[in-house]
Length: 480
Image (cartoon, rainbow, N blue to C red; front, side):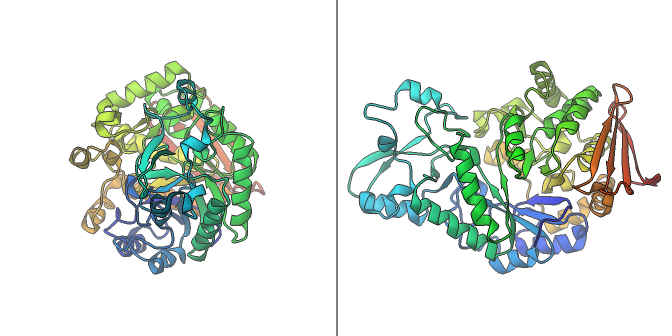
């Protein structure tokens, strides 16, 4: 199915109900016309990181569902799958074969062996300092092979996730087969997780290494194009990297919007938000919340250092049950540039602020994505957080069917569903249309969306201080 210009739900297979079957039932019962697409977070067998350490892309984790259920969802919704192009589980048959046969393994070139990557006597301290990393230790793991030898292999994120050498032919064949398999099961858009880390090159910081990163992206694009599949490279970093990707005509993520939005709603000032909306490309997916934390580094230079610091402090002050410790090593936080919270709780569990944030997201350039917790205006799950000591689990509540039935009756959830239906059905949000952003005064923002012909016009008028807003379409008031 081709990508539709309709809101996309981000969800795990076992979070809106226990499995894909219950997820399908919930979609049919409550959300059929609220979203047009689903980003089905990793549903493959995995050994860690909530699915992001996959062992096998050819099968579905039986606890979550089946390919038949994936395809059933794909009959009604355009689907996004994750491809962890940077790494794979150490329990995968590829890595297990390498451990067993070592240099005789046909997969030996699939992995980055530190003693082959660096010249003799290295890596030096200077080499290690140069590597772009979001944890305090070198991204290497010592592996003991069946022949008794040991050596270091590269693993950027954790012990379960072994990095792949994407330049090796054996890895390229793995990539080709994976793309073909995902296409055969209804994938419309492939999310390339941790894409910026995929190229390692001596004397670089091993993050978004140019021009090699473009060569990789073009190779993957050429393969995906065979199956009419789009790509979405996933990168959390300075917004200028997203702009580079957009200039190469790929879809991008608007990961800067969450923090810029929080600043605007906390301060009541419209200027930073207006400037960002004017800069943003139309070929993108917007986010306020995802399965990860709220990114800080993505908004740097769109907000000054002082404004970023103000926003972070206000988040801890205004946010409901948001504490600094939840984004620290004590709660297994791997990314010091993210703050763990649901978006609803980041806005103090305040319905008016939350609905305004979503209204602005719907009027922003691109296609809105909404995380399943956000779809239900979910609060921080402190119980799950403390039970698991995993910071990001504050925003990963498991909803039962009975819970969902109650949550959808809340006024804020009903209003959000109505807003998303409007966004899905109005022609004013044509991606080939236009956007105009005005700031009548320091606290107000007006966003005008027109379709390609200019005949369908939707206008959002909002006051960031009072959190009040109005939506019209061709001068007709839209009740939310």
